[in-house]
Amino acid sequence: MLINHDTRCALEAVVDLVNTAVVREGGGTRDELTDLPALRRFVERHALSGVGTLREGDLAAVRAVRGTFAQAFAAGETAAVAELLNALIAEAGTTPRLTDHDGYDWHVHYFAPGASVAEHLAADGGMALAFLVVAGERERLRRCAAPGCGRAFVDLSRNRSRRYCDGRTCGNRLHVAAYRARQRGVTE
Image (cartoon, one colour):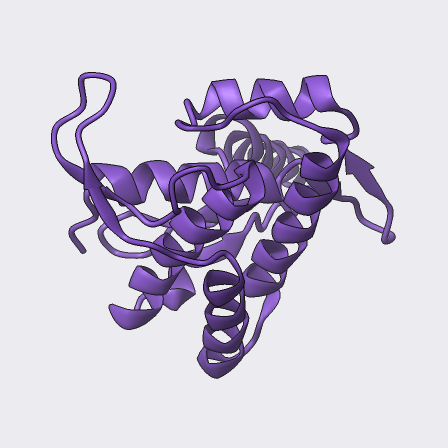
C-alpha cells in the first residue's frame, strides 16, 4: 500500500494522540494530555502548521477528537469506522486546499485556514484514516498485543504482520520472556 508523506505524518499524529490516553489492564488510564503545555508539546512534536495561540478550549476539543480516533481503532466493523470518520470530518469543516508552506513541496491540507488545532487534527487525521478505509486497509489500525500495553499503532508492514507498538520494547520483552520460559523448561 502506497501512503504519501502527508498521510503518513497525519497517521503518526493520530496514533500519538490516541496514545496520550494510555489504557492500562484493569481499565485504568494515564492521560498525558492534561494541560496546555502538554498540548503545545504535541503540536510542536508533529509540526502542526497554522496553529495559533492555544487556549483551554483547545485542550478539551483535542481530547474529544482523541476519543473519536480511539473509537475508530476499537470499532469492530468498517461501517462503524466510516460513520465515526464521516461525522468527525464533517464537523471539522473539511476544506481541501493545496499549499507549499515551510519549504515543503505542494501537498493538500484538509483543514480550513484559521482552523483550531482540534479541527486541524480532525480533518487531516480523519482523512488519513478515511484513506485506509477506502483502500480496504482498516485492519491496519491495531492495538499492541503485548500484555499490559494496548498502545495504538498503524501496521504499515508489507505483509500486515506487525503485532507490537514497538518491536524493540514490547516485542523484544515478550520474545525474551518466551526464551527464558523455554530455557526454564529445558533445565527442569
